[in-house]
Image 1 (cartoon, rainbow, N blue to C red):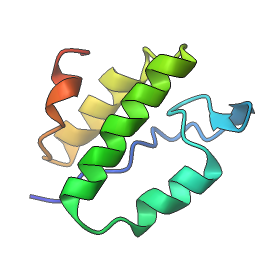
Image 2: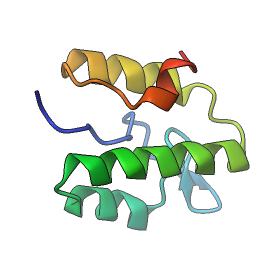
Image 3: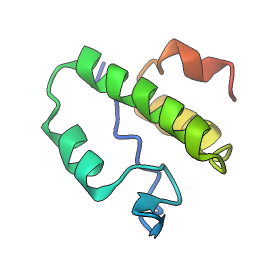
Length: 85
């Protein structure tokens, strides 16, 4: 089984006060995620990102796309995402 994939859903347009309109990450957060090696750290990052998306709003499209990405890579998604699909 591979590591938790990046929360990026290949939109990469930073139009919401520096946050991507696809996944809500900032450029600094994208760089940080790439540096995370342990899967538990990556899962915690995705969980943090979900809370950020809730706070910012307008990210209901993200969870279904990310779940498809996890399924394609044969990675079990974090449990808090299963209820959002």
